[in-house]
Length: 440
Image 1 (cartoon, rainbow, N blue to C red):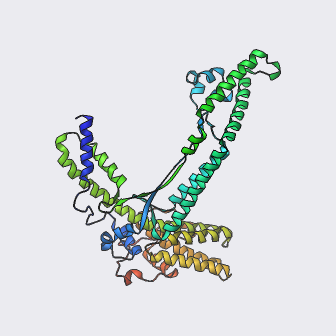
Image 2: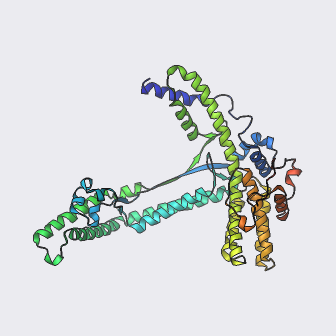
Image 3: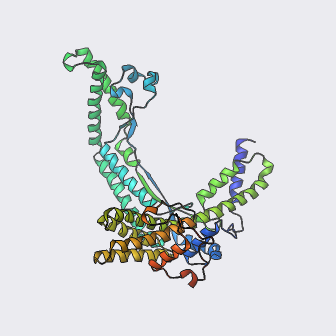
């Protein structure tokens, strides 16, 4: 089969995906304990998850960020470091000791400017990564959307403002950098020949100038123009469209179709291929929806668990709640509160309890033992749900949180943080079908 015909079949495979019937399976792929934990967090019955999950997806948006800019580095040659003239003349023919290693990188833009650019890029990516990571992309719920868009807009504005500032002074930056390279190239040339400037004759100086000019010219040719530098900057926040019928973003759908289509060996297999494609897409949809639901619930639990166990560790070390721990808890309340778009009752109770702890600390009415007991209860409740969801949170056994909390321990912890029996009130079954055992 020719390449052209294979392309036609792959396109046919893509067309097979949007079938008339919804591809939502009667049963999302979830272990029973995970299903019960998710239902309890969402405040619904386990058998209602299939009907309710599209509403959860619709309560937010999926995003990707694309950031580009001139990276500002190039390969550093061994000759640039004053190694053998042979290495400088012909890197490919350098001796074995030189060829085994790379010399490194050299800058085509001042390092301090690159550091500023990279810092803003890193800040934007890290902010996106703080959202809820799912198989469909990073999910931002409506409760956090305005703050998210405002923050990304601010970072984008700073990024382009820095671009404009760099471009405005680029010619001067470029001259200064090339002068520095000329100085380095001159020193390298003399080092290779072990020449003292006082002993150099006219021919040495002409040879030196030719070498320096060649090296500086080679570097200058790798530097962009001011216009090219400006055009290299891009910063886009990209919403990902989700196909609710197939529960896949369009990008994932095309990738799946291409991957399966590429396996077609003969033209007469196209009908069977379409059936396999639909079945594979359905299985993948089951898995991805299950992962999405687990990610939404586990993300908040992980944030709370990590913050409370960090503070417990600091409390154990210092004997009191120190200022960094107080700030950490306040930041956790703000972050988790904005992401709790589905009204997780245990999360709400946990945040309220942490707020109460902070108020008591401010009023000097809380003892270290009482703070420890309440934070341990919050961590226990979160850890139990994370285990139900198949996660493996870091151990906090030395901080009074069992590795595998028993059902009785979880219920006791829920009473401490003030969680009433929401599950029973909503007729939601118990979260665990198999009781967990206390760690030894």
